[in-house]
Amino acid sequence: MKQARKFTAVYKKSGKYYSGWVEEISGVNTQGKTLAETRENLKEALLLILETNRLLSRKTEGRSVITRENLAVFA
Image (cartoon, rainbow, N blue to C red; front, side, top):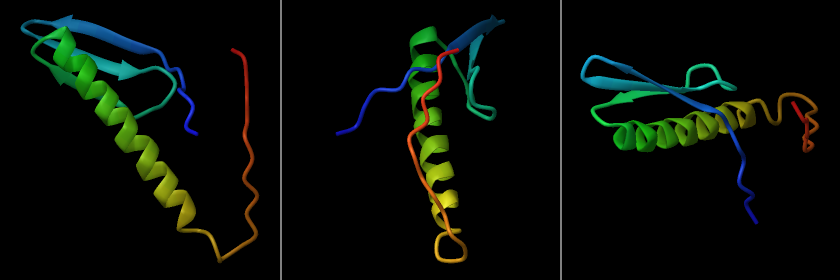
């Protein structure tokens, strides 16, 4: 069962557009004409980055010994 993960979304209005990014993960950013559009774009960008990172990580399997485990932190 998949569990919801929480991230911090930051939004900034610049002229006619909004930009948004996720504080915890570098490279997750987007823009939109409205705050709602930017929020949806940011969710999609975050999902794409997480999936891409997962796929890149799995490419190393078979070449070396890999250990995976859940990691929880409270910050």
